[in-house]
Length: 100
Length: 100
Length: 100
Length: 100
Image (cartoon, rainbow over the protein chains, first blue to last red):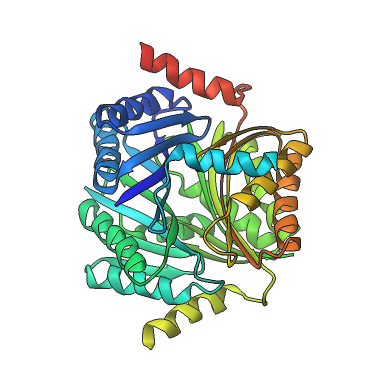
């Protein structure tokens, strides 16, 4: 089952800046071979369900191992059976409607 | 790794009412032996990380098998290493502060 | 326009415990006369759109005034025009389907 | 108060495709003069709190007026008082840490 997701990991208890920890997650997602797109409030992820969620688990494990005591993550994820769709398709579909 | 989560599954393409599909997910979470609390905009879930996410996957699979063509889920999940905490602890902690 | 929402405010940069700040938000929502239900990963809110979002803004303002340097909030909110529905209706609707 | 947000509007009860409705929201956000970035699972928005939330309200109103009977939106929004930060800053901050 393929999934398109959006991940927003919020490390708590390490001060105001969290970009180092977000960068750790980006590296983990890339190392998992997942297609990703970093934006200003999270990261789009596309891939096989099990691979996506295994990578998300590694993000939590790696951040805790790096000393982050608490993590609150927000994630959107969508699946569909009517047709195949990737991240670029979703954006193009909206942009096409905007141009109409 | 224990996780406290909040799951909001939104079935798309089956009309306006989605309560039947939400009820299916509730049964799947209960059958998985997870501690849950249904509220007006989602379901609190507490348990082992792998068991929680395996149950969430079964929700998507079961809804698709039941004819739902598209699902957009929103999920919050938190882990912490500083101390053990369950769902009741979280609520009591806030209520205690409100009473102070 | 009536809205049913779920609010999860995450204060950042004040340490691991955030229950005092969540309790502040609960008091603000109650003072606004909104119907609420605190659960383990957020707060259900029901009311007029403008009143709900004015209260959410006051939560951010009050937390910053209390010294929280950064806040990352996650919120779900739903509106519908087909019929009136309150928070209890949503839960009962799912519970009825579970009993069937 | 400036806010950086991420908006994901899910129209319910209009079938499987929702790109036309997402495009309507994009136009509303642009017409409001807000800085936005469309990605595969939502839209980043940056601007004054009141202007951002007024535009989000117009999205719900416009979709209902166009015949969407039910909408479930998920939104992240962050404010901070320690320093000014825009959407590009957030991304650059993570990318810099990834390069280190």
